[in-house]
Length: 640
Ligand code: COA
Ligand code: AMP
Image: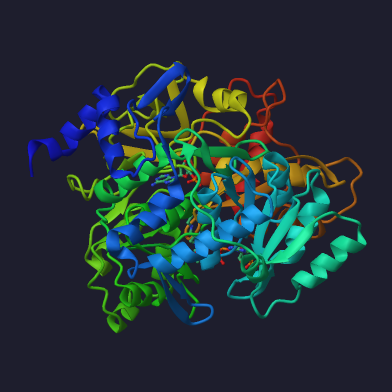
């Protein structure tokens, strides 16, 4: 290995000469107009990458691999444990399908800059819809299928899509999820309906496209409900449209501290450069190799490493419809590795904990040949050392934690397997990735000493691939992330950096929680609870859970005179959260309490509640209004 390729020298160059570093990385992209500069800092604190370049992301992810002779290589392996099917889609086939569906979208009026909302489970058409949108220079917003119609409606209202693309449904182990009624309900709830809904029909679901179209017509809605296949047969294949590197590729909504989700924007150019750089240097995947990311296209990990990363790199990506356990058993992941010859598996620690719980000694591994697997990557939540040791022992490959967020779009910290693999320290996602100038700051923005916990913050500018702003809301972008520490992006995570430069991420500093690697807002759940007529006030906090990492728990003070039992209230609140946010929130615990701890100005002391629930030592805050509330609360929170 040459000196140039070590982690230390690469990192150093990335922060000292970002211009040269990223212009060099940009050579891996086929630009229509090549960048002559990397960073545009003329509108600080909002930065843009590759301001004078143009490209098409879909062309880079699909067409150019066909042109380079990879047309017969599988671009996608679709493995459905739910349907017991295994299907391969080559780059040539993908190109044809994407070009045709882009034609269908264009026929429905979609042009450069328009939004297309995609509400789909793990089916290959999700790739096609995303890439076809990108092909037209339009902007997709994929919404995770586990979200309820009202969450979908909020996103429709915020990004105002011209078209919604969906399917008849998704398959969960215990039930079928009907998507069409959810879309209908969302359209009913939102204020800005789309002009067209395109439905990919899957067999075995109750509501058909015709039902929805009939209801829309009867209600006088001017919405065209179209069948995917028919829309394609009426269309001509569309060519890639030239866009500026700084034009948006997608919007992905994520939970913030309030009930209103944040529309994280990803640009075209910076994203393409960051993705391709990460594939080689972090994940050590080159063209022709296979990567399996067991997440969902509705999450950022899915956007980056089910769809764009592997395809931009000319690799083969596995899409898996199924669960780590129960479909049919805890050997499912090992089977998919075997059947796809995946070199890399990327999943969430919660999936490994679920497998370990079901098959503690990984006996089912003996049934499969997983010799293709070289590295297991995990992200989405902290990889606890126990799970790390278990997975390392059972699989016999490096188990690499990487820490990132929807906002960054790719890893902030990782062990760079393709650049300079380093020792792994259990409990740490290793070191800052080149491009991320990470510091630990005290509440006043001063750097803290190695080993001391503080706010993890990234010195601006963020590298390419990270969010340039929030959709239509520069102000919220600046106030949410850039004002807490001048000149830094505040990650919202706390942690420390040890003497060797290894980063330890300890948890969120705000009211965002992570349930099974799914990011959720306790504030959004509180809004649902507070709407119940018997509830005077409430707090939802994340409590630790051995399988899911965290689980939400609600504490409720009743209005005086409210006549409702704990059991009745709990069942109504659980049902409301499921209805308004979705099953994925996994909200099942509700406790009635006499009072909530508050400051004299009325702010609920959620951090103190979290510390009490976790059994941690805590200081009674000097601002508390009535300290005696804590004694009662201790009995309730620590009883569970
Ligand atoms: N559409 C609709 N509903 C969904 C859904 C989807 N895409 N995904 C999950 N749900 C529902 C489930 O059906 C379940 O509903 P239920 O309460 O009626 O049973 C609920 O949401 C909770 O599901 P889940 O979080 O999957 O929990 P589980 O107890 O069923 O399974 C695990 C536990 C650990 C196996 C599962 O959470 C898992 O596979 N986690 C990995 C997640 C992951 O990859 N995250 C990566 C993010 S980067
Ligand atoms: P999301 O935006 O859904 O990817 O969630 C991002 C949040 O998940 C981060 O801010 C962290 O709190 C948490 N997270 C993600 N990956 C890790 C990790 N490897 N270690 C610790 N926390 C993580």
